Amino acid sequence: MSRRRRTRTPRGPPRFSPAVFDPGWQQRMSITYHDILYPPTGERLTRASFARLRRQGATVVIFQIPDSTVLQDAVRKMTLLPAQRLERVVSAMRAKGRVQVGADADLTVFDAARVVDRATYERPAQFSEGIVHVLVHGVFVVRNSASVAAHPGRPIRRGP
Image 1 (cartoon, rainbow, N blue to C red):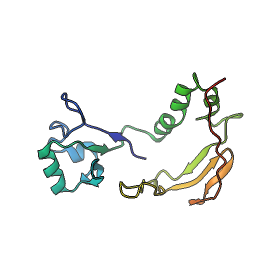
Image 2 (tube, helix red, strand yellow):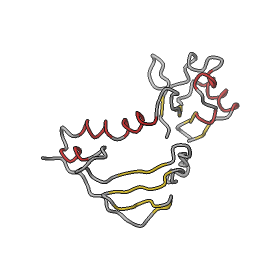
Image 3 (cartoon, one colour):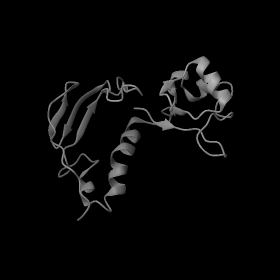
């Protein structure tokens, strides 16, 4: 699981912010150069590219999960909260983002210690590692970490 965090300056788009990258930034944010992406090329940074792009004031994306984030809270933010936000305008969302009787059987079983995003800028359609099973509408679409040729999902339409 990774969360995108962009640094912002008062002048506009996300750019290298001097305060964010003060000495000790890697230890403070628990990230490395490779956790910073340069969007125009999809390049993950190195010490050399970091120095060059910082001098240029380039726009960057930082991949970071704050230490204070616990797994349960992260999962809730990705599942229940978006469903609750949408259920006022799309009634079908009342059956999403929850594990309870009557809810849709859309579940992901994962090994939190092994989840790694393998997608890159050049190869965006790569499966994440550590995802053991995925069920959509009660049907396996990923089983034992392998994709299954099943497409049981149904579109969600706005309305009552």
